Image (cartoon, rainbow, N blue to C red; front, top):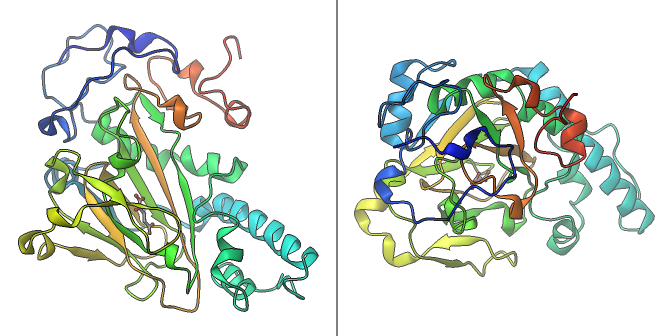
Length: 335
Ligand SMILES: O=C(O)CCC(=O)C(=O)O
């Protein structure tokens, strides 16, 4: 595959005609990687670098996902937790002002506070804030720029890394149906985008268990074309789901549940079929799903502003917090 001649252009510029992507290019290595200077890329070759072993990168490519236990420690997670708590503080203040609660529960821990705030309320009150959140709070930018995450992603796509605009903070509270996410391919949410590969990095901020609704994967389905999908009706929020007719017994028998500890990252391809189950516990299953792609792909501005997270070719263009807060995908020239 020849390198896109536009890759040295600034992010957010038009990246050319949208084309259908054949299923065979869904695996890692479908794009050439910016930052290789004038060297001609070898078709299909994935430049190695970053923190994954060759074996891990190969497993990702084969299975469509990779679990990295303990990738992040409490210090790495603290800024994102603080951002989540900032939002919860705001929600508690709203509920208090609206007379829906009498105590904002400020001493309740991270793992349980949001669940306790909504214990006596209904789904509608919770969903008024959205089933997942995409606030521009500094702690999320710090997490999205964490070198441990970027090092892992670099092993798969090289060192020119764009943080895709689609990221979600997931406050999965008990008893809210929209906590459970039906079988889907992430790509269903951006079928119009000419971007490949897009790597989801899902991170647990508490232990994710069978009880509180961990992820479930169907390995090797990333090689499928984008399957027919429709909107579910159980949650009231219209998640997209793969049509039932695609689920034969052999597919169902390959499902793997992924209970993981806090700080684990699960990397997966945006065509991998996955889901998560309801939260039947007494606490919140906090997680985030972040997305990364090579810089020579469609930056998907119609979904928001992503940002240049790492570049060896143009380190001066890597976005800082101020850029991100202003919705700029790259640093201003001369900064
Ligand atoms: O976190 C979950 O429960 C589901 C995440 C998911 O489906 C995704 O990241 O695409």
